[in-house]
Image (cartoon, rainbow over all chains, first blue to last red; front, side, top):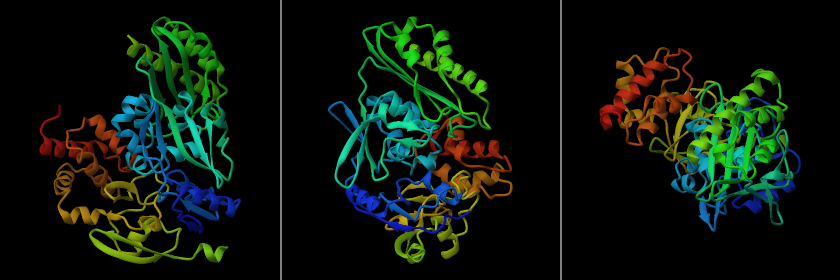
Length: 287
Length: 165
């Protein structure tokens, strides 16, 4: 189908966009890459009265590394992350995840900030942001605030972002040389929505694990940091971690949504298999 | 509100080298505009939801879903459709390989396939079959002719850049 009719505005700055959002009230939506929003219009799942197109704002932060933080503004596309050697070096987890983010033509237009704003439970960028506890910078008509990913994801498509706020920037902590990362995803075909995926970030001190964050996504209303794995891993060596027990803990912790892709039992089993794979990735690169 | 929402905008952009200035309603997608207003029917409308890839067009050098970009958003851009790529000779070798390899049956998906194949091969190396399949992952061929499509793209890559690594 075709999108229903809507009004269209094209602000030149994020603060102007936030002002428009506030003035318009309910029914207005920010149009970033549009690769999730426009399908919902054509499917008539949503019918915003106003789209505020932020693709021409002049104050979008370019993709850049500065003082241990990689910043990603609203106009940065998925493909920019995918092709960036800086991202590969500084935020290797994102580089691992990018091939799983939709398809090439979608990556050419879709944006990481938009993905964070939507917070689809099966999306890769939110999972990576949570694994790294990235900061999410929100803009309203008066100014900006920053929310850590740990506090940002609230529920199904529900976040700490207020209706009057625009996701203005993502701030990923740059990796230390001894950090290790892994990313696995189960999908029906490359680029499809994840049935179950895991983004993993391990911070090491010498051989000891300072922190191990396994973020399971795709099967629950929001991405989850496995508390059980965090507790099991603390202070141990990566290579001596009992992978079977970790995979068991991941599966036991989940409360999967049942849908056409499977029942809760199947998804726990899939998460178990994904956990083993991602732990193998982590330990292989630590060897 | 509903009156304002159908108000049209003037958009100016370049399509296959020619300047275009037209009035469009915000809800009009780029691919509908190209087909219905400019008669460029080489870009196909399949699913209209971004799943099938039949509507691929190149905007400022990047291949995009023509159904997931509004025509008003094309303001100031340089758009190339399959007609433009075909006329310029840029994809002649790909088109010939598609014919030679029978890489099409009904042909509905072919323009979108050629668009994304051209982008893949613009990286100037010989991709693995796995990489070709990844690049095509966003394009449906409902005749399921994928094998010969991969064959054709691989053949052109080898002809252009040498044998696979």
